[in-house]
Image (cartoon, rainbow, N blue to C red; front, side, top):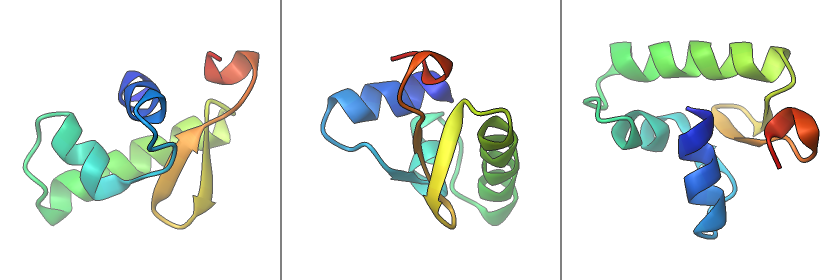
Amino acid sequence: MLATLTEHASGGQPVMPCQVITVALGLDPVPANVEGVRSKMKRLADLGRADEPTPGRFTLVAGPAGGS
């Protein structure tokens, strides 16, 4: 998931909605999959590896914790 955020950030899309992350991971964007991705992304945000600037949209954290 973090690699997906990194890839999209380098392509000029620093903030990604959960639906786009789900598709980028090769999953169907059905509610169950999107909710699973959202849950995991929120866990990464709680750990300081990602940030959720707006509900359901995630980006990498700048600095060493985010891998920058």
